[in-house]
Length: 146
Figure 1 (cartoon, rainbow, N blue to C red):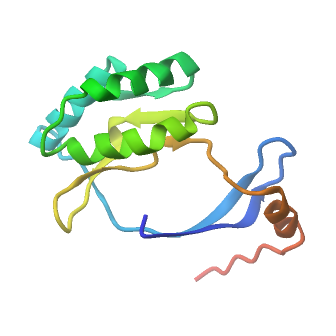
Figure 2 (figure 1 turned 90 degrees about the horizontal axis):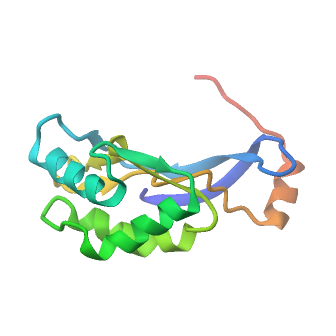
Figure 3 (figure 1 turned 30 degrees about the horizontal axis):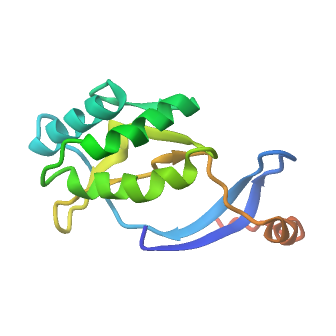
C-alpha cells in the first residue's frame, strides 16, 4: 500500500461490525510463481509458523500467539526477510483484535524489484473511530459507473 486514505463510506450497516469502503493507493503485485525459489522459501516459512506449507487463516488466539512466539526462530533468507520483519512489527499489535491470514496466496512479488511482500495479513480490521463512523452515516455513497 502506497497511501492509506481510510474509510470513505459505510458499506454494510451492521451495528456491531460494520464494513467500510476504504480508499487506498495500491501497487500492483504478482503471485508467487509455482516451483520458484521464492515460493519454496515462503512455504518453508509457513510450515515453521503454521505447520502447513500453504499457510492458514488463524482465527484462534492460541494459534496467533504461537505464530508470534515462532517468529524469532523463523527461517530467514533473501526471500523471507522482508515478510518476517513486517510480521514482527505488525502482528503483535493485532493479536487480540483480528484473525491472521497467513495463506500462501497473500505472499506476493513486487515486480519492480522482485521483493516478496505480505499482502492483507490481518482479516476483519476496520480501524474507524466512533466520530468518523457517525460522520460517514450522514454522507451519501455515490457510485459512478464508467
